[in-house]
Length: 382
Image 1 (cartoon, rainbow, N blue to C red):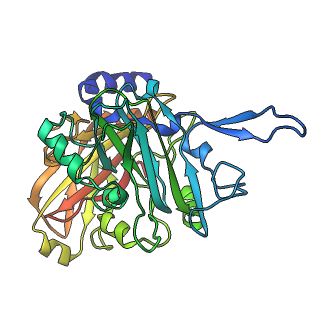
Image 2 (cartoon, helix red, strand yellow; image 1 turned 120 degrees about the vertical axis):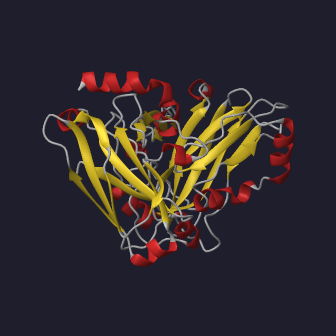
Image 3 (spheres, rainbow, N blue to C red; image 1 turned 45 degrees about the horizontal axis):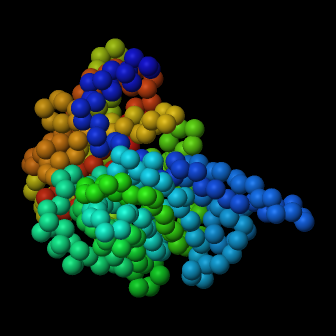
């Protein structure tokens, strides 16, 4: 297992940049416990990792993780995010999980006054933008950004970067607003990735998420967790639960519900693992989209403080974890002829025994024509 992990990391280290986003939830959430009667000596319960911090069991009030009340909306609850300090922001890349059931999301940070800072945000994947904003770009974003609708736009446009800049006054607002005007909530969870592209590191970031309690609890129960000491949700969308809002449906990126994927192992024992990934689509989907692209990715689950690592298998037989602006460049199959039944046959360099020893998982997704990307999730092992 150690050999496989070391080999993977040494071969793919030049491309590992996309996996370096630090989880906000790996910062301790300090919860003050009631002092003993007649004393003022407070102790704190420190919870680390989303799984510990926001378990819905035993919640006595509306603030999840705290024994207190006060809901933003009837039937709702609140997730107060742990403060993320300057020391942890030194790499300028961080992420926060937005769970199923989220109705509204407020997220902000604090920067030195009279300075410039810019950030690229993307929902569901790392932002593509890495270059600093020019003076003209900075001024344009400052004049046109509408933070109070950012949350809805992030969820409805998962394939786009969203830029945020500092107004020079200290507080930097990243995200705000409700998902929609009808108090709708997200039907599945996903990560929000934030990269600072201009300016010095922030002093801190903080925020709060308002949720529909019933939908949140169902979504929490459906999450697949990392294998680290303090588990977070794995990368990618969590399973959908409950009822989607209009905005959430726009963001789901799903084609016809009849599209199915099945996986077979084509290689023999002792040979590099080769999979046969068969995609079956409805005739109407194929007729509407004569070309299709497909992506194959391998995930090495988190180990201790090391985050999940994701690598894409390209059509030329190489691996990369760098996500370019044009994602066709990392596709396993790019703009090939579409058909009702297609089989993709990636060979993955390592034997099945080696892959299983390192807990490697293989994921598959596709995009037909100009339609949205469809994530079919884990296809191996099953």
